Length: 356
Image (cartoon, rainbow, N blue to C red):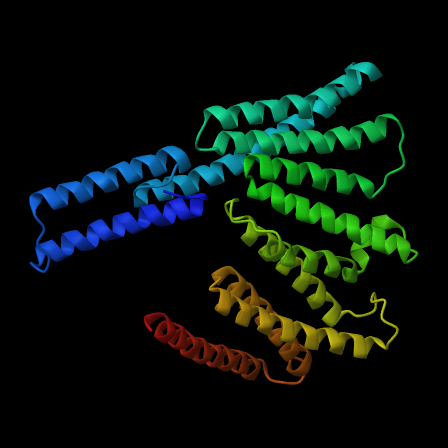
């Protein structure tokens, strides 16, 4: 058996469960007859396979287990947030009681000890939930380390801190397969690249958010990164890269399509907004097509959502002030029905292609 990722292992387990359910249904209807020895051999093989998958990849072998796994993911995230907040307020509650040496020692030791704890838990716990929780606490400790050391030694704030945050976040994410830290790394990198670009253009880095164009390049970079560097060994990383970069990119374009004055482009504001509106429609439609070809439901959903946002903001600009409100919402409703018709036809085309 050559199962590389948890996704593949879970898909294999689901395949076995589906086979067993279909086999039982066919036997009950008298359409399939197996000898007792053959049925026992198949069941023994599947039992051994499922046992191995559960031991190596901690897959869910029932719907109840799948629901509990989702609940455990939510609880572990909330627990990590609570522990991180506890660590943050603990530092600030008793920080004044320590001298400089004590403060520096605590700040240096916190991320090292929490990283060591996360690596040890990852070795003894196959589920990975507790290790990921410890990894999130370690990341928060690292952020506090950099931020408070700068405060202690009166270091001028710099966007380079976000590069350090991103590097540690990516390190933890790949060591312990923590998807949330991939998202944190993407956000920190986008802020760092945008701040540097803004500095080169003559503005102070702290105002990086005033121009959404700062975030377009890192968003595109992170979208194509999993296409260049294979992420199949890491559960869900490709989706995180592409979905988060998509959100950053289209949010920036959506803002610029309605408020074009912060743009660096040397054109009138109306032309800048029009260009970004066209870019938003075209790129969101291309994302839907790309998602269809890759059979990626998340990218298709993101493309649909942002295409609708671009469309409805234009409806608002064109018709809200002079059109009767009942007529405005009627047009919006009819547009939604038209979209349903188009998507239904695309769905039938996809189903026909899969059957062939």
